[in-house]
Length: 161
Image (cartoon, rainbow, N blue to C red; front, side):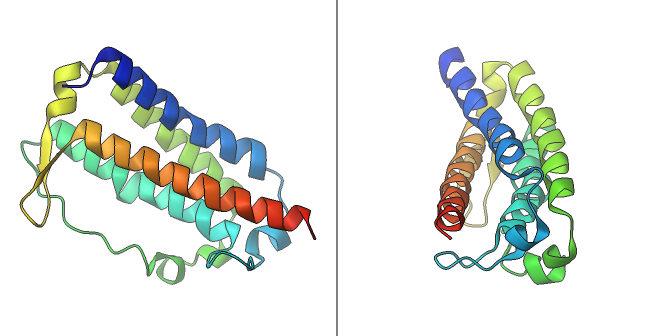
């Protein structure tokens, strides 16, 4: 079982991403958000909508289901088609940031209010392995770090131009 300190640390990590997105990308021009970067396969706009959709349709959804259900099956999700299927290139980046931030705040509140034993609740993956809420939240924090690093690299690239 995670400790209270681990719970707080994880929640603090999850709190960083909305701040990063709001400070770095609110007010960004559409040209910069849609420009294809040299060293990343996705423009910033795709990153923003991917993060938003993962919050509602992947990580947040899984965590919510494990809180509410007994050993729910967590089906694999193929996110690779989302940019085209969901028309990311036609969408507003600031809307993605606002929606992501609201969804993340709700998740943080839920995790912060949960007692430590709730973090042990599990869902079942396709391979029949179990994953608990703490691990799901850790995966989400890892996902945040990956995208923050990639988006920061794109920002550095744009500063050099």
